[in-house]
Length: 430
Ligand code: PHE
Image (cartoon, rainbow, N blue to C red; front, side, top):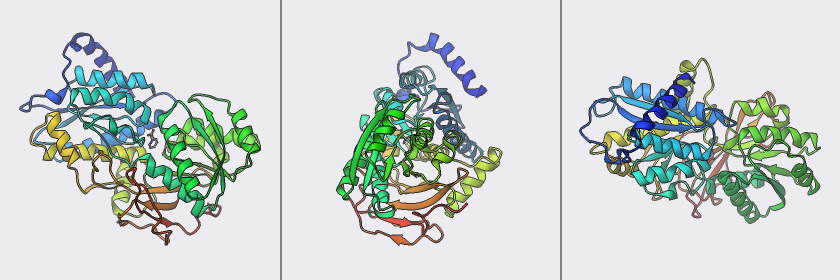
């Protein structure tokens, strides 16, 4: 973290002198020499610190490989990472600072959708392409034609969990607990409600909290009173860990379902055994035998002392890869040229899937559902494909099931298919 605080300091100092130059690298000199400077914004500290640090590790790994292979257009890549401490306003300030003072050619970040929504107008106004590695809320890329992402979107993710709840777990009644200060959580609660209801399920109670709350007992007591078969909690890992614990303390023993915001090595440290048997949707499974995934897992562990890479690192590695691919194809390194090359991205072989941009700058990719086993290991439970996409990878012992149900991949209705592990709905074996 030293590097990041030092950079922050450097940037704040520079900002004092350089903030009058308001043009970003949308106007960059295409004949510039020296390193290509890219900005990164993430929560390196705060209650979502692993989002920022994991993403940073993925980006660093990608850059070291790109630079070792000769860089891009003969130039090395340099990254300047700023910590927004998990605060939306800080994310916007960091983006402005990177554009106006550091003249970055592109921005990587944020992870949290709300913070990406704060950053995006800065990038759009300056014509600096921005790629969010992991923000799944639909509105993020709708902020403008310079805003891209490396992940699937929540209309698909919400469908995935509704489908898993009805088809795999055979659930009929679900209660929801959502974070009202988080666009991601609010959006997913809505999509899940729509999809689950369409599939014949019933939402028996809907409760809310605000990010950073520590006492969820009142909401959990209300949820318990509605006698659900499961509760759906589309939040971030620190809150979810506490919610799981308090649910069990309240006597709410039903399974807990969630989404990608759960993904952190800290989740189980906070929630412990209260999370055993919970399920959440995510971007990849480290157990997937796909050679691309296994190669990435091995590289990451080697670089970072045996740490298992979460999905955030893989998404960020892919976001940097997508940017590098676009910069190579772009006719020059101005914002508009990189933007055009990103919009034309086709069949990019990412760790997390083959990436082709749709008209709204969203990749169309599969999702997985993971089950939390005692001890905290995430066990593959199912893989759900968007419409018309064949699965390039297979997971051992995973028969194809439920083919032909609808899966909104891009916010519009389309067909999808699911692969399910045989023991998806049974207690995990350790
Ligand atoms: N998808 C979440 C959001 O949009 C961020 C996230 C992605 C968190 C992947 C963890 C893992 O806010």
